[in-house]
Amino acid sequence: MIDTLEFRLVAGADDVGFLDADRRVQTEVIPNHPGFLRRTTARAQDGGWLVIVLWQSEADASAFIETAEGHAAHRAFMELVDPATVRRKRYTTLD
Image 1 (cartoon, rainbow, N blue to C red):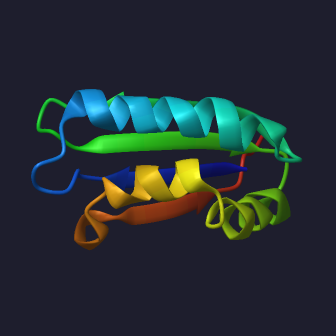
Image 2 (cartoon, one colour; image 1 turned 45 degrees about the vertical axis):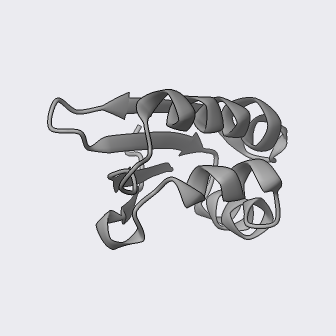
């Protein structure tokens, strides 16, 4: 299962601060969650951001979202994301 999160940063947020918050999620929050396979973050030339996470199952992805909301590193990450720009999609892998 592939979970994508597209967004822009809130006004006033800078890339350095965001990347620090992203690294904290990458190292403190997500690797210990059951079903996690891989995560990567990318930035588009127009300033948009994309986070892609591979999970063993949709249930694992859903459980992570519920758990992550209580983690300080995840909250700090989400405070830098403009909620009006968030688009989340899930894809079922075919291989």
